Image 1 (cartoon, rainbow, N blue to C red):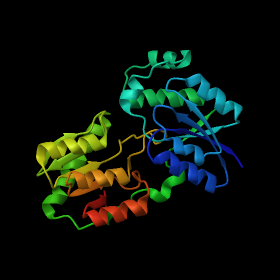
Image 2: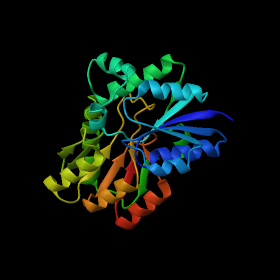
Image 3: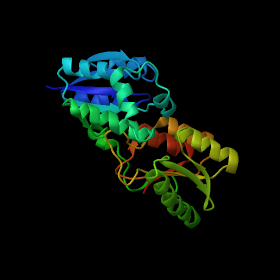
Length: 266
């Protein structure tokens, strides 16, 4: 039995990781971020410590005291909160001052590197959840028409482009026109903006970067995503297969089926 560290952000992702770690026979030592993490995570973890963003040295000290040598980072931390983190300790300030830019990926990569310096290994976030990765092909819903497949092909090229520029991972297209591009606001807000601008029957495409670091940045969709697709009358969502997690996979697929939303793995 091993103590596995879990640095938990928001939404369902950390719950599912914690459950799978325990199912494997290991213990979950959780660092819960006060600004993000759901209080109910306490019920799933063996131990939980509540800390504010920016208390970096405290996190490392706790993990070492708990004999944690391996950590998983799971759950979103809103980009704007990363940038506006207050009450940073000296180590966090030192890391932030060393950055060449303040992109989310740059910040998180620097944090991961600091853990590794202290002998704490960061695993890919989806290690325990590979059964939830999107398969290739039609996952649920009606097949796309030829023009819709062309939208997917067009949107995938655009999405890869913005992802590789570290802007976002999602674009929304319609009739080979880009309605919205994801930035720091996140996927849900991007989809809402696309509906405001282009109306119903858009196609959402979500991909990973070509050099995606899965230790801190795994593309994820879940039940909230499916609700958002319905509310904004999206025709289909295309997600990159074998790298995108579908949280609560069976329930999400059933919900999409009931809503008449197509999801495909590309």
